[in-house]
Length: 174
Image (cartoon, rainbow, N blue to C red; front, side, top):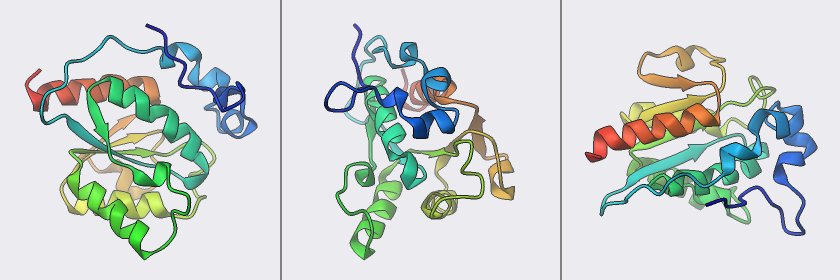
């Protein structure tokens, strides 16, 4: 079953945006095939709970990943992806609470953001590590903490999906 997760309102493809193309995650970096709906995975009463951390400027890309993770049997905890105003004490506390609830924290580290962004994803990564969460880094490691042996590193979203499925299968008894 093919599901189109990559459309803005009005029919323009998110994969065609200059921002994602500039990051190397646009049409050539993502590809429509990756966003075809995967075979249904059975979900149990306690699905894998995933928090997505990313540069705010890459929120649209993170939003594309959300339905793909859900289709793989995950519950995505990342209210900031759909918040109207994600700044403030309440929003920060909600992000930390969602990390506490998550089994897995996915950290997007796209090209061009190695030393850029507001730093929220770095705080979220540190918090997740301090709480003993399983962390998957998507993209190249760009700071000393990305090299910790406890962090699973994958180059792109395709390998992310495979890794999440493997982790979910191992931890959820599938």
